[in-house]
Length: 300
Image (cartoon, rainbow, N blue to C red; front, side):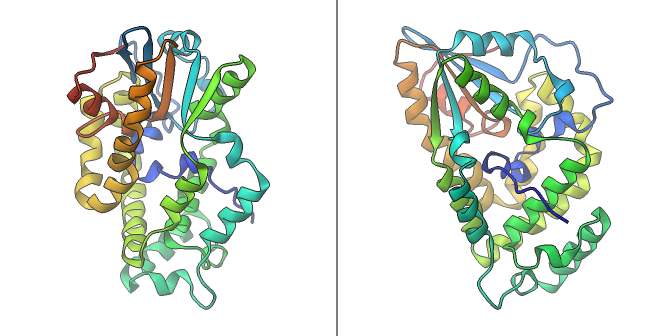
């Protein structure tokens, strides 16, 4: 059995379930709403849009709501979490394979406590994955592969995610593209955990996967209606359960992105910044940090 590796931009689904949830219950239609996961930052000479991205979608989820399409059309610069073209480079795929694997002589069993390993085995069996297929992977990567496998079973595809969709359009339409992080940084972020952090990552994934179906409706409606407060509340549990990982995967990165977004706001070209929806809601989100610096921000 072959598992398609996750793209770096999809590696953070585990701590930002709002990126996934809006599209997992396809039988529910998007509610009529006048708000979206889209914010407008007023610069002196330009506008910077902040769009909360969903990294996996289906073809039938398009076209997108008119305000989102209009924001992209109005922007001359499209900003993404990472360089999506670089992530497709065969050389990067080899690097990803190498960094995802455990050292010789170690297996995922040696990296996890007996309880977590037992729960992991039970879960991969339940979802239909042979455990030996992932035994040489670091726990963080094994957890990510399991989640991606589950998404694929639901018919969800990263190639239809907002990031990929708008990256391709930006290239076709001749827009300038900017990456907030090198693709190698994202890879190191997810493969560089300590043994304790790797177990925590796996443990959190197993818990989140079990709760996903129960919480999916609320998450979907919150994203579709642009309910940032509700999304933030739903994500607070991840903050409490794994604050070290949450800080590294979300809030630290939010702060590192701020100078670039501030620079864009001082320019004379409109820009759209497309990042995971979890980065734009709640305390220490990109929106929250910009407001604390005095920026005028309106939700569209």
